[in-house]
Figure 1: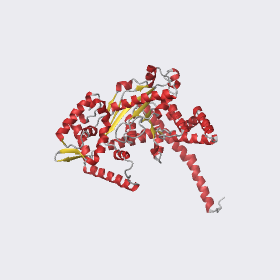
Figure 2: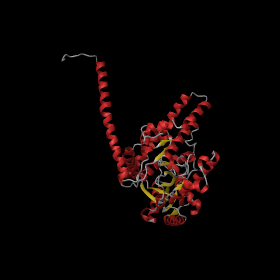
Figure 3: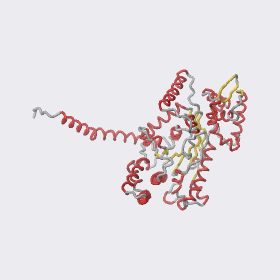
Figure 4: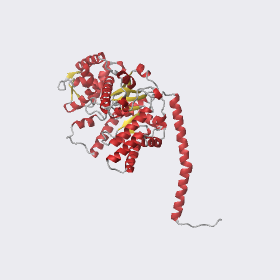
Length: 476
């Protein structure tokens, strides 16, 4: 019993590996699962007790269960069979594509990651970069929304910070499920995004089978009451103006919407969200898209530019001259009830043919974009930029510029625009806008006169265009 047994080294290594695997599977993994499940239950109890958030069971369902439900959905299966016949493909190969699409789309929401990690990161990033403010919210109209409704925030898209900003500001009322483009499908970002409840969307996909799988997921989530956030423009603004809406996700939601209240059917309520920044991190890279023939910086050059940007801002922080990137403001407009819209017009969306439905979706999209435009906040930089952009070749004194700014503010307020005035001081708001533009050398000061830098006219117009739709509506 006590005799020494000699074994080859490779056998010892294999035995040690099996022992380590047994310890991992039988002891460590169950312990970790118990720990994280306990933390998640604590977070859910916190959400239900302190925050005004009700998580639908759909979000708490295991991801594999949702994938299976989507895969076996009768419409998805019918589309797969039709696709196999039309393309003369083996049905098993088509099913594998459907499974791949479902796994690509379906998120893996984790309440602990959302509220303990994602929310903390979003709050820290937003506050570190901007002075974050909620400028306006139609509280009375928002309070009248049926709590059983499916809420969809529709947002103008100026920056990739939009995801962070809106999720941070809405966290105490809703857990948002964003539609995220393919740009974020990189490790480990995509794992974090999925855990936050977001789902990935292939923009402008021409694959009819993929669109069927995506539409069914969106419809399942909407029917289950999942709060979603979409960008109707479909991508970042290039020149600072609002872009025409794209109908894809809106059409998916409305295609199967039933306005009747029987069987616990939910209303679909769109909430327009307008946001604006004193500085958009991607402004110059977006403006570069206006000139497809212009040379692009290589990867090394891009790293050098990013490092220089970081070091300049770090030096300003250390010297006490850093003012962050100004203000970032979000406004929430009056909700748009699809049930009320359908009843008013005698519509039943499932009964409409494709042409009729698309026409109605177009009307709703136009109405939503108009509502978004009306609640986009007027921030100091956009205000001052809109005045200087009127005549870029002219140099003006600070006093003349301030008088024009005050006159413009009065006109904007008179036509119902939502101005964010820091400290409720219009002189201070004007000073903040002018300072931001001069610090970035977008506006030059020479002998007490201010004029736009000739090479920065496009950048100046980019910020002026953020509120140009208000001027076009008669606020100029």
